[in-house]
Amino acid sequence: MPLITLRQSRRACLADLAFYALAIAGLAAALWLNAAAPSWQPQSAARVLGLFMLGLLLWSLLEYLTHRFVLHGLQPFQRWHALHHALPQAHVGLPTWLSASLFATLVFAPLWLLLGAWLSGLLLLGVLSGYLMYSAIHHAVHQGLAAERAPGDWLARRARWHALHHQGGASRCYGVSSSFWDRALGSHLRARGSAPAGSAPPKPAAPEARHSAAVRQRTDP
Ligand SMILES: [Zn+2]
Ligand SMILES: [Zn+2]
Image (cartoon, rainbow, N blue to C red; front, side, top):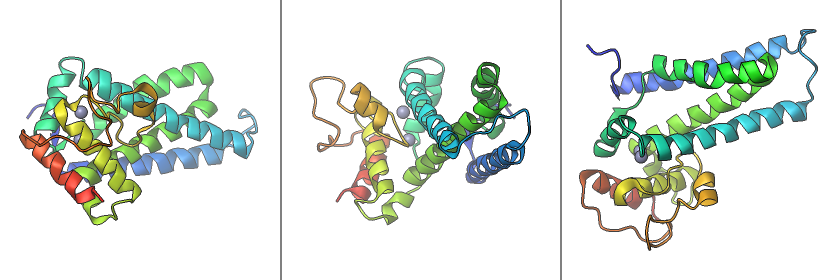
């Protein structure tokens, strides 16, 4: 059995969500319990909230950049991500031990070295919360859970946005948990001479496009 398997079972996918929910709760508890320690400077509620929100924003940027420039721009990640586009309803993703290791080494360790325990802990809390939100949305969208929502519902709108990504060569709408960076950087538009992302999508031709259309139809008003 290979050490890294991108195709996960449904149980492993749900266990991943549970792991990150517990990790977030544990980190929040650790920050709360240590907030009174003399070595940790007193922080105002506004600063705590601001750093958490900054962590959420940082995650949304990481999500966007990774999806656009790594998963759709760099081999072998591009080839691995193609498996998700070919089998959108399968549970394709990093195993929990690997994603947690990447967060620890590429996100938390540099933040810790730069900012110290308190600030890096709060930023990480926001980053992990953003990641959990992204994972839950992506799971819900591809497992048809968004279809049960009203068309104008926030999750239904996220489903439509992500369906646009899966269509037309996956050249737009890279954000899953947010459309902020797509709109800020112009990638909500088609690659060349095309209509905005909100306009009617083309007829699906490939299996993944057919799936995307199914998601779209379930979420269209
Ligand atoms: Zn997807
Ligand atoms: Zn993609």
